[in-house]
Length: 170
Image (tube, rainbow, N blue to C red; front, top):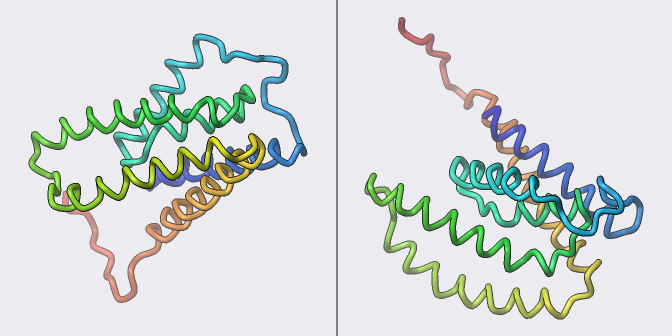
C-alpha cells in the first residue's frame, strides 16, 4: 500500500509538471540539457522496470514521462522507446509468471487483437498531433491514472465496512 501511495503521488506530480511544461507555465527540471545524460538511462530504466514488475504497469510510459519532465525531451521521440521498454518488461514478466501458471491465456487472446488496433490508431494520432498537444494528452492521461492509483492507495487503507480487525498471530 505504501509503495502504491508513493508511486501514485510521484506519477501525479510528474504528470502535473508535464502539463505545466506543455502550457509553458514552467520549464524542465534540468534546463539547457538537450540529450539526457548516460546515467539517466539505467536509473530510469531500473525504476520503470521495478514498478512494471511490481504493479503490472507499462514502464515505458514512465520513462517517457520522466525524460520529458526532467530533460524536456519530446514525447513523440520517446514513444518508440516506451514501446520497446514495455515489450521487454512484458516479456520478462510473462516468462516469470508463466512458471507460476498465473497467465489467463483466454483473456490475453481477447485483448491482444484490439490492443494492436489501438496501438496503430494511437501511433497515427501521436504523429499527427502537435508536440505540446501530445504533451497535454500524455499529462492528462498520467494525471488521471495517478489520481486513480492514489484513490486506490487511500481507499485500501480503510477497513471494509463490517470487517473486524484481526490481530496477527504470534
